[in-house]
Amino acid sequence: MLRHPTIETLQTLKLTGMATALAEQLEMPEVQSLSFEARLGLLVDRELTTQENRRLARRLANARLRLPAALEDLDVRAPRGLDTGLIASLATGQWIRTHDNVLISGPTGAGKTYLACALGQMACRLGFGAAYHRLSRLLQDLALARGDGRYRKLLRSVAKADLLLLDDWGLAPLTEEARRDLLEVLDDRHGRRSTVVASQLPVEHWHTAIGEPTLADAILDRLVHNAYKITLKGESMRKRLAKKPEVGHD
Image (cartoon, rainbow, N blue to C red; front, side, top):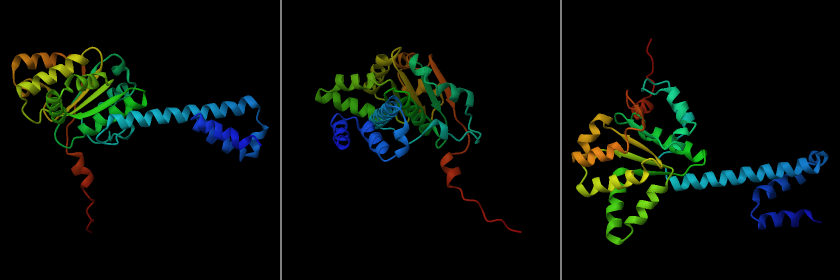
């Protein structure tokens, strides 16, 4: 008599994991041999897993990662300059806890965006909040926000992400206003949060690409000195994946 009302009560309390697990237990006669504590433990474990999965899904949705990437799926067989030891170290997330940065550079198609998104996905799995932005669009958004009164609010939103992913760094020249906005973003995060940057330009060319020497010094000072650097190389991964095996001839 109390079975269905109990499940409905659990659902009302938004304990959907426990409700589902209880419904499953009621369909499994062998579970009846378990003690009350054991069955309750199974229900609680299911609820914990359900809530963790729900929080992870919410973090991934908020991150808006460009690609569904994972560190476990990185192709380390191709000679791309990936240090598997460094990747394993980054996978622990300790660099996010100590507010260090990761700078990824390499030619078009080398896998920079994939690696950046994989680091973002890893951060979400570890319980951190992440936010992906193409740098040019973020700077455009900041310029628009300055005009309609949302500038400080947007800066605070960017600043609070545990991990900020800035993709396509250095693709377009920066205006004076864009340089100052970029400095605001990185100054808010320096020593407090971690940032991943992906760029086609080698790190040693970033100072020139930023343009104005004084602001370039200030921007890179907040980004480079406490950063892990990954330089990808080799043939475009997109080209490699697009290639089809040729039919052999005798």
